Every structure is written in C-alpha cells, then in structure tokens.
Figure 1 (spheres, rainbow, N blue to C red):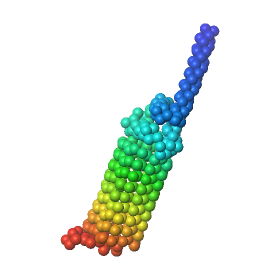
Figure 2 (cartoon, rainbow, N blue to C red):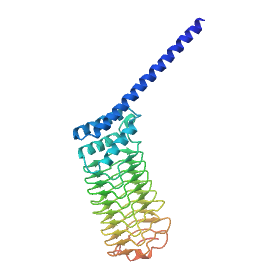
Figure 3 (cartoon, rainbow, N blue to C red):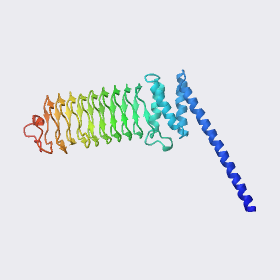
Figure 4 (cartoon, rainbow, N blue to C red):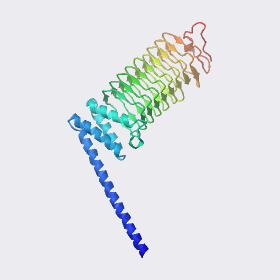
Length: 334
C-alpha cells in the first residue's frame, strides 16, 4: 500500500507537470503569435520608422522561434513583392537581414538558408551583397530589376536559382560561387556584364536569349551538367579554361558575339555552335573537344580568329579551318 501510494503520488506529480508544461507552451505560442501579428501590423504602417521597427521585430522573433521562422521569412518576402519599387530603407533592411541569416557562419539555430525566397518582380534600389551565403531552397528572382551592383561572391545555391527576364543595370560579380541547383536566366539582361570567374555550375545552366552587354567573364568556371546560351548576345565573352561537360555542353547555337570571344584552353565534352555569328575574333587556342564531334554548322567568323593547338575527336570541322593560323604557330590536331 505504501508503494502504491508512492506510485500514485508520483503519477499525480507527473500529470501536474505535464499540464503545467502544456499551459506554458500554449502561452508561449500565443505570445509568439501576438508578436508576429504586431510585427505584421507595423510593416503595414504609414510611418516609415514604424515599418523599420516591424522588420527588426520580425527578425528578432525568427531568431527566437524556429516554429515561426518560416512564417517570418515569407512575411518579409511578401512585403517586398507588394512594395516592388518603393520603400527603399525597409527593403534594404530586409535584404540585409536575409544576407546576415544565410551566412555560412550563421548559427544553425537561427539560419534562414533552408527556406524558399520568392522575390520575383521587385526592384532592388540599392546594392545587393550576398557574400559567402548559402541558400538551400529555391531563390526566385524572376523579373527583378537590380539598379546597383550585385555580389554573389563565394555564395552557394543548392536549390534552383530563377533569374529569367531579370535585369541587372550595374555590375554582377559571382566569383567562385557554386550553383548546385538549376540556374535559369533566360532573357536576362546584364547591362554592365557579369564576372563569374571560377564559378561551378553543377545543376545545369539555361541562359537562352540572354544579353551580356559590356562582356561576360566565366573564365575557369565549370559547367558540369550542361550549359545553353542559344540565341544569346555577347559584347565580348571570356570562357577561357572552362569545362563544359554532360548534357547540352557548350551549347551556343544561334548566338551572336559582337566582341572578341575567348575559349582558350576550354574543355568541351560535346559542343554546338550551329548558326552562331562571331563578328569579332574567336579564339579557340589550346581548346580540347572530346566526346561527340562538335557542331559548327553554318557558323560565321566575320573577323577570323585562331585554333592553335586545339584538339578534336575526329577531323577538324570545316568551318574552323578558315580561322587564320599565324605562320609557325601550332596547328590544330585531330
């Protein structure tokens, strides 16, 4: 009886603790929900200072509550989409909050890296700096206009990156960035070029009908799951020492190169330059073509170029034989 009494008393204590815990948990959830509602109301205020306070309040709530963190991220993205071209200070504060909480060094307990970011159609009025960040979800920047410099240096995208019909008014830098998901930048316009030296595209790149004004630099980048630039326009392009492998490797059919195009030392595991127009010089020195025979049907070289020491899996394509090879220089090899 003593043992039974002790057991009953202990069981009663456990039940009491469970009930108390549930009440406390319910109070915490209710408090967090009220804080989220308050932050949302602040973001909807007519006063800019109150809207900024709402951003800080929502970010602090996300840091404290893993349960509400996805809701906070979606709230901030929704705010940016609804205020596409206005409210610069609030927009910049939200973008900085995203950058800070997607840093590789950010604590896992407060990281936003796992969440999808839907920012399509907005106008980014200030510099965007995503440096050494990590994005595991889909990042949707379709139709976004970037009015200032964009930096994605050493940033890792593990989900899909959507840049279709985006417009970059200033310089874009993506040095040593890693794109492990599919990158879509069809009909994207780069007004001051793009620098993606040493970048790694392992999820495939689609840049059809894109415009690379003032040049595109992809030197020493790796495209290991296909890269298509069909119908794109380049005012100068540097693909020196790039690797194009698998899928639609090195696909630039119907592209137009208005400036010098450099493919020196590049490796092509299959290539398609059908109907491409090179208005300036095309340099394929030391390039290596392997796998399926490269396609250069109806390609036009309007200012010559060079294929010194380039190697091919079979005979040298007829279209490339017209490229000028300086006297005494190394001949292409098949």
